[in-house]
Image 1 (spheres, rainbow, N blue to C red):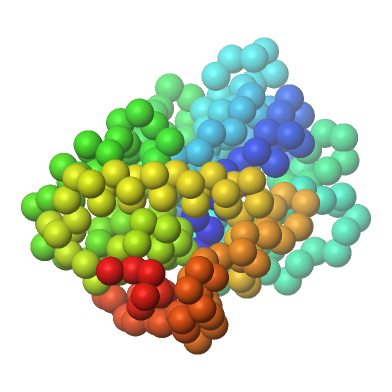
Image 2: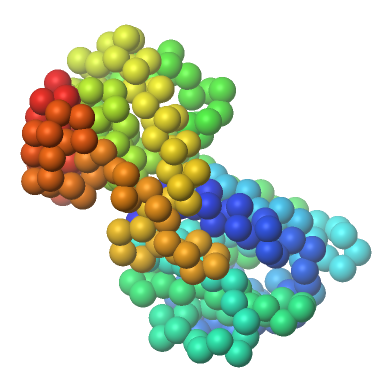
Length: 282
């Protein structure tokens, strides 16, 4: 599933190519891709004639601020890529991928295509005057963004100290920290020297500070690398992310640790894989 660095990479790409261009129309090829409104006609009517003023990111959600022809508020276009979603900026004469779910046609002869093999991705049109949180229910329960001031070492130590669950599970909880998933939880735990099964209450303020620093470090590095591509992720131009080639532990089971050369191990926690170095992490 695309995580914060991948979604941020897409957001930046969308801000480069779509802003100020009018949406001329489109086509919904898979109706259940729409979460709101469920009517294809209403969804396309809400977008047609509008342009994007900016793209924002909240956790793993993309939010495009819309304006009508006069520049007035026209609502929001919301997108969640889920497991295999891609937003691709292409020429309309290009071949239509078999898994294309929505096409939006822009002035200047380009299309924004939502391609999603597993069909878990979703799109919303939030009408003007409505807060995105009122329509996109998943936004309301998100915790602070890792790069926001609210996400401080003190905040992290506080939310962990009374929780009796593995730290890897806590890092995946979007109500505690928005945007982190399996890849970057593993990577941050490696950089902070903490094993995935360590209970949150055992972390303490000093290790919480190291973990906070590691989270910011690994997210920054991955954003600079354009995210991670292990299977489906692509940026708006269809280009793979490059972080996977320098990952410390994620998806490296049996390979030598980049620090101590011991084989990377993998275990299961709450149905998810966790990769770690048995020597570097305690």
